[in-house]
Image 1 (cartoon, rainbow, N blue to C red):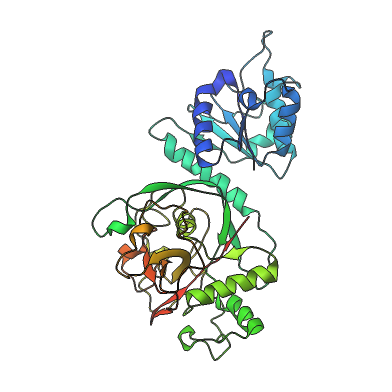
Image 2 (spheres, helix red, strand yellow):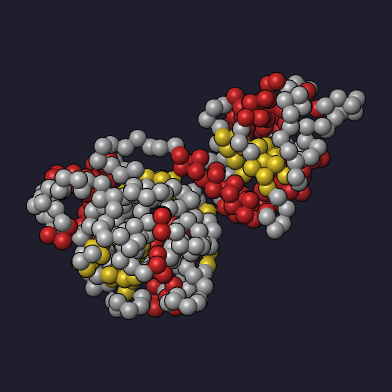
Length: 406
């Protein structure tokens, strides 16, 4: 993945420095390309720029107040010079339909008029722009920009078979995990801390009855009464409900079968992967923000809802994370129900706590929440521990979603 920043040094260098730093924090230094500073010493900058512009995934065109009006020594607007590098960068980006070109307006700049730029660049005027303002609005504006980039990068769907869960791409980078200590927040959910994860794909929805039925049919796995099926078959009309009443071992067996069936690496998400997909890169209480919205989930309703019954809940485009069914993760909790073992307390680390071969005596972390849970338990950071052989209580049976390695 590459993000190319096109800008005029005389127009917006200071702001671009801040934008680049924020993008590096969200992704990685090797991901973000910015003119001379990204070109190795001794290399032909023209060749490097040509390659960088033609092979990037995202091009940010940073436009300040003077961007279109900067002139050369003879007083001619530089954008009208066919050899101008900023012009060539943008023309290359616009010519490649697979590149997302985003105008980024800084320092209160407006989009230029059609007469301010050459005809070869006018497609830029029809691209949806984002304004990145000065403090105190810089951080929230940059968050919107990163989320927009993430949506684009995750929007390229992979081809799936009819029985295979659809997945969402979650980019590499840091996110905020856990909570600050406060009323109703257990100590094992604290502190709020940053965790950095590599990229992965996670189920857009929990696994549905219809998807799990294919696994049952092929493996002849027994269906427990707690799943609410009609024997070994899904009741008519329940195909899009999340599968429920599954143990941790059931969920892992499904992931192993799916991996073999598709030649892809599927498993259960660890709890950090689950929480990042739920919370995004902000510190919000719920997947959609800090204020509970009853229109975004099934909480308080009399029956479990289909996985797509409500709008997507998270910034990444995941559905049905909270307020319908709890979901297994591969992360260890410990032996006692009331609190995790000392070694599994926060800050979260990839330190063996995701061992899928651990003792059956150890509980696993369950994330998400049921339709019967109190609103306070719909927090992105809420976590509990359940025995791996447990299916959940009536009205609160366990479900799961998959994660796929990339």
